[in-house]
Image (cartoon, rainbow, N blue to C red; front, side):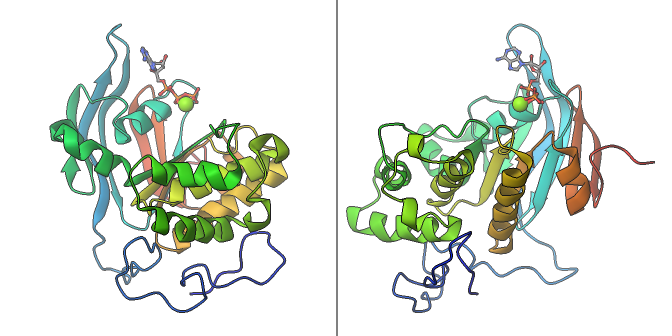
Length: 274
Ligand SMILES: Nc1ncnc2c1ncn2[C@@H]1O[C@H](COP(=O)(O)OP(=O)(O)OP(=O)(O)O)[C@@H](O)[C@H]1O
Ligand SMILES: [Mg+2]
């Protein structure tokens, strides 16, 4: 698969190939997009399963109530709901920032509550996370921000450069690699954050209102990028308040209301239409 780098006018090597443009070896680790998409009717393996999940905070506030959710590999899921509906709480459970009070959260086959401590970093690497406020390190360049995500997990130095180059090309920031976050537009900052989320070759990318700080045109660009990443085989879940985007794209929509899933349908709009 050859993809034009995002918003990059100069020709570059195919992003799912090696840095020299040759085809990647079959089964090479760290190569998202090599996962074949399931044919119609074929059961796809779940990346994420929530079984009857309830989250009650110590102050007694129940942010999630009896949530059941299955996200198969390759899905693109919008998570919608009013402020306080539980979207960010659900996301925190997936990255094990919080543990469910009841029920199970299973990521790529691992029950997050039963995970031995030594396996936690391994499971965290399976999730790429993107936030509304980008959360970039201001004293590091674009390249260093992305590389840092690999450095802290002990990736061998020789593997870091090629991995960073690859995601930079994918998000179309090759030319901005040496700039600092303060020298980037909001959209470029968010693309840096997306590159950082992808550099571990995650099983799922979770974006919590990634377009919340961006104007509508740039929001569409970010969305197109997430769609392209999904086409490469990465499962994507995006929490959003952007009704226009959700309605236009006709993807799977999971709607929360006061901590409960009130709707889960493919091709649904932001609001209930019936
Ligand atoms: N640490 C916490 N302690 C107590 N209550 C919390 C905590 N975190 C979240 N809540 C409550 O849980 C509910 C769900 O919050 P959450 O942040 O998941 O909503 P959200 O859907 O992401 O909203 P928004 O669209 O505004 O981001 C809210 O009522 C919130 O006040
Ligand atoms: Mg939130």
